[in-house]
Amino acid sequence: SSASTTIINGKPYPKDAWTNTLPSIVSYLGRNLHLQPGHPISITRKLIESIFPGYKFHNTLSPIVSVGQNFDSLGFPADHVGRNRTDTYYVNKDTVLRTHTSAHQADVFAADESDGWLISADVYRRDAIDRSHYPVFHQMEGARTWDRSKLPPGTTMAQTILDDLTTLPKHNVEVSDPNPTIIPESNPLQAEYHSIDEVEAASAHLKRSLENVVVEIFTQARRAAIIAAGNDATATAEEEPLQVRWVTAYFPFTSPSWELEVFWQGEWLEVLGCGIVKQDIMLNAGVGSRFGWAFGVGLERIAMLLFSIPDIRLFWSTDPRFLSQFSSTAPSAAGGKTSSNSGAADSGEGKHTFNITRFVPFSKHPACPKDVSFWTNSAFDDTNIQQFHENDMMELVRDIAGSSAESVSLIDEFTHPKTGRRSVCYRVNYRSLERTLTSDEANAMHERLREKLVETLGVELR
Ligand code: PHE
Image 1: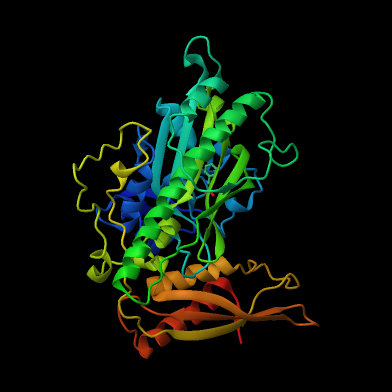
Image 2: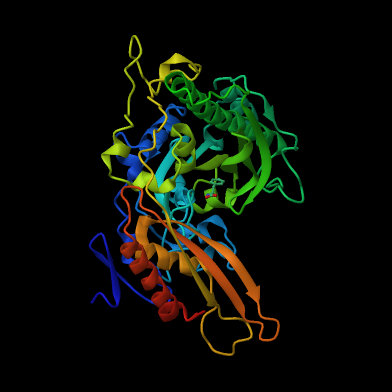
């Protein structure tokens, strides 16, 4: 019965105390924006794929994965916050909706003998509600590895990688990279398995490969801005030089690890995470002779700045006023050759066949802000009611209002000095991207939210 199972793609999954995946979330499975021709997420995917000639693409892996795939196989500790029910959609205690494309690293390393591969997919996270967060988004994962047992005779791993580095396109953007490759306390060498020379070579290859992604994306974004400026007196074309920097990072499944940041419209934006793959992942996948790097990038963030899309909810719109603004290919350049598997030295004209244009917002409908105040359960309560977590409230809002919720923000909070109880006030901004909400509709959603807060989270309204 539906009370004890969740049906996903026709298959029943038994529910248990871990289940927190509502039908409203299940309904996103199968939308596959990254595969929808002409969709900005799909165009962004193809643009990045074109920068990795010869890589194998995996674009249809199932979003339903085991806790083992999503966390254990990657070395996430048992008490890692990412495993919490407040952060992750559990189908049941053993099964989750993948929270990142890294969930497939081990399987793809085991099954795909290619030296380079890319995975693009929808991923799911319980999170805040605002213009840049949505419970479903898309990531691309990539890896480049070399097989120690297949090195050209008479050469080393490090030399092979450096030789391959010389075949990558060069860019002329200035990159800040002040840190040493290996920082023993925070970003150690996997000394049991790798030599310093190998890691230096692989990180140089990783950095150039990923800088090329960012340079290509921002060159395209700037070109779109310049074209828009030519058409529209209010738009300004960015003239500042592109600035890029490497910062050290931590992921349980890479060491050393980095993030790549780009200075865009006045702030440093974190664009992707990457690092040298933990050798344990390769060993567990039965490919211990492989060595190399991996990265992960969020496609919505890239698409939002490529096309100047102001709100992440727009990607889910089926309104032709949104979708008709994008097309997958440009009027093809003279000669029209778009071989994405052509020579690596081709950094120029060949791949600029993407039609990146600025999104022109259609009319903005009025916002309906509504506040709700309540006492959360505090540590001083000796009831056995669960502790209030903000993400549980976000989930209620999403379930009730769907994409008519633009943002939810904490606007006031205080702790009662005697009882230790915490009082909070949240502002929920209701606004549809596609039409004007009536005040009756907004009031009805808000009233339902107030009821559900009491009913399912046990808070006390004020
Ligand atoms: N999975 C990481 C994330 O979602 C990104 C990542 C992928 C980092 C691969 C390193 C290597 O943030």
